[in-house]
Image (cartoon, rainbow over all chains, first blue to last red; front, side, top):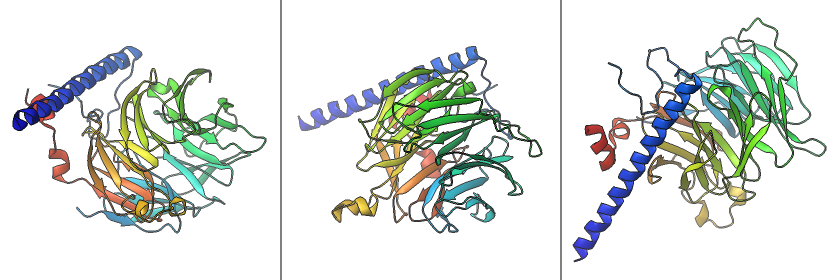
Length: 60
Length: 335
C-alpha cells in the first residue's frame, strides 16, 4: 500500500512537470510569434548560429 | 574542469560581464579599477584606470568596441575596449549604480543614486559606435523615479521598453521612447530591494534577484511573474543560462549582518535551479564571502561569479551539466 502511495505521488510530480514544460513551451512559442510580428530578427553570432535560448529550432 | 580564479582586484567585486562572444570577462570592484580577462584561461588582458571611487557597474557593447562603467565618483565613463583609452566622462550629482547598452549598442542607460535633494533617475544617451566620434552630452531621455529609487534597469527586446527594479521590491516598465511609466508591479516582498535584473537572450523575459531571498522570472510585456525561486539567503544576483533551462542565483549574508555563527555556514554558494520546474538542482561553493554578481557565458558554456572576497571565479561547465535532464525533458527530446 505504501508503495502504491509512493508511486501515485511520483506520478503526480512527473505529471506536474510535464504540465509546466508544456506551458512554458507554449508561452515561448507565443513570444516568438510576438517578436516576429514586431520585426525582431534573432541576433546571429560569429559562428552563424542564431540565438541560444535552448529552444532554437533546427533549420533544414 | 577546475574553476579559474581571477585574482587582481584588491576589494569586493561589484559586477562581472562577458562580452557577446564570451571570450572576454570585464570586472569592476570597489578598488576603482576595471579589469578585462580572457575567459578561457583567466589571463588578464588589461585594466582601465581613471575612476576616483568604488565602481558599481560595467557593460560592454555588442561589438566589444566600447565599454561603459559607473561608480561612486558620480561619473559614467565610456572606454575603448582595445586600448583602454577613456573616450567620455559624464558627470552627475550622485553615484551611478547601473549602466547598460541597448541591444543594438546605440544607446546607453545609466541609473543614478538617490541622495538628499536628488531623486534617483534613469538617463539615456545616444551612442556613436565609433571610437573616434565625439559622444553627446545631451540626454535623449531622463526618467525620474519619485516613488522608489531605481536600483537596476535595462532595455527590452528592440529597445521598446525600459525595465527597472526598485528599492521597494517593485519592477517598472517604461516606454523607451517617451519615458512614460506604463506598469509598476510589486514582484518582491515590500521594501525588499531588487538587487539584479538580467535578460533572457531574446529579452522577452528577465530574472530579478532580491534581498527577500527569492528570484523571479518575469515577462517583459506584462511584468507577469512566470516563475519564482526561493532560497534561504538574501540574493544579490540572478542569471538565466542559455542552452540549458537553468537559472543561477548568487548572494549570501555579509559577515557583519550575521548574528549567529550557524547562519554563516554554507551560504556563499552559486545555486542552480531548473528554470521551468523551479527546483534546486545543484550548488557550487568556493567564495569566502557573498556572491555579488553572477554572469553566464553567452553561449551557455560556463559562468563566472564576482565575490565580496575580491575574487572572480570562472567555471566551465562539464559534460554532466549538459547531459542532465529530467525524465519529462527526455521524453520531449525523444519525440
